[in-house]
Length: 506
Image 1 (cartoon, rainbow, N blue to C red):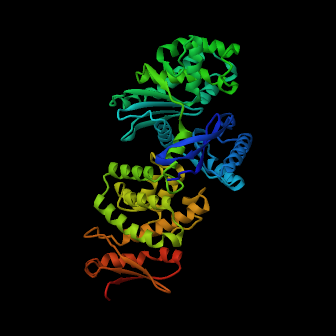
Image 2: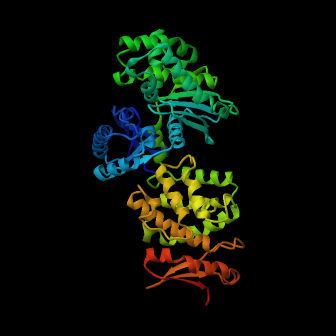
Image 3: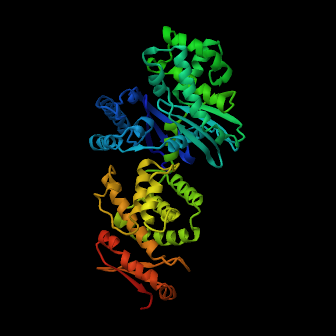
């Protein structure tokens, strides 16, 4: 528990960048001590190939520079999460590398499912989520997240849809063109997106609905001003439908409430249409505004973590995937037991932290997933499946590492120049290579998939490492020992001393 420690969470959105700085307290609680917001407008800086242009990157760098200065004044850990605009950009890895080089900040580019999970965590941090399922709707600049979850189980279903307030404003209402035809086109596009996934939410009996993000909060405020409502913490579908013509007129004539930021005003019509279609498709009559969203979710997620990133989501995602592909649970258990022993013996020598441990366990869960495609080249098939799946709870950075660990647990030993490490920071490459070496030996020593797991006693001598096995196990698993001898070289290269596999008492 990081009690008393400051944590900074940066939400790098399509329209704006937000940072909150929070102080961790006992029992997972936190309170926000400072915040900063910049209208970076990444969505306006996209070229014909979908790349973020130099002007957008410059705005991003300037914003992050100020965020870093404020966070450092609190001696806060900084966690930067990039969402729709960055994950859609083909030059995202180059930008992340530049940010790391020039500002010393690590940017996590999350997939849509992870973004939805963090939004859920933000709402959960407010105490809104109960045992009964609840909907959460978050309309960002580039995407809309629709989530259903409860307190005991977390996220039950989530979709990240490529429709956001700024994305649709640029697509349908450029230069303030709010004609009936453009409104119809925007509504049809939004309806098509949400109706394509609406059936996935039908099995859930939802008891509450929450709306997050600046777009929904602003819509609630505007609607309240239109109809002289005292309560701007709730929003109904009925009022939203009636308000759309009034909203268009107010945007055209610049008569929105002064509290609505100018940068927000241009995106409210698209945001209203998106929210209306989501509520209609999911048969939502009203929702409650929640003040917390993704950045609070980052804080909530990090606050009890012993490593840089939370451990449980990684484990949950790999376990769910192993179950979905019906992988051999007995073999997973064997390989995991052996890998844990090796990790414990060499963690300090290889500078492996809690996150590395969780990634290793996830790799043990999924190392044979390639068998679902073919018995040949299972490491390559496995890496492909992992690298191209939606793994809720795992960032793109972690997903790339996990895919590479599985890729190199068999056959060719990894080189840090391999394409699998493209865009990966040098520290992550080093950790990935080390974890692949550990998994390689753990899998080799359990090759026959029979009996008890290989559980060596690992002892360091002056110029060598002894791995001592139970005598009976050693005699009954000569194939496993032979395989271990063949696969120990990558780990030997890392630790700088030979490894001898021996029978106890010999």
